[in-house]
Image (cartoon, rainbow, N blue to C red; front, side, top):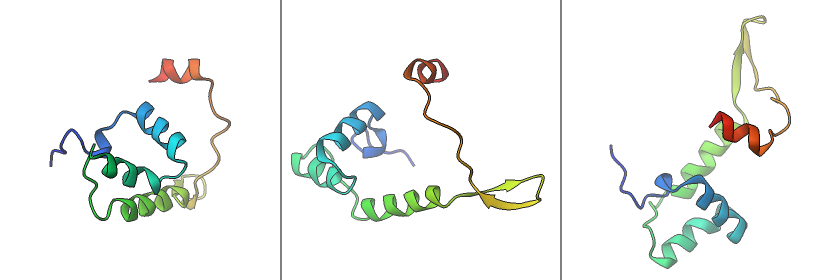
Amino acid sequence: MRLPPEHPRNRPQDSTHTLLRAYGTVAEVPDALAEDGEVSIPPAYLQRFRLAEKCFLHQRVHDPSKKSLVPNAFVGPNLEPEVTQKLA
């Protein structure tokens, strides 16, 4: 299924980050975008976002040495912007 260009998922990450900084919370961004008439937000958008967020927060991964599922481990501190730009 192809998403329309105005769908929030097609928004570049830098503009999404700007919106989050401007409105403070994820819950306020869809409402602000809908008020501006910039995009139409699906009715269950925020509910589905919260579900996805919980999935990532509580993600478990397979540990081959233990042969079982374990909580996803801390991967280390954030990388410097120069490093992430090279990785992108």
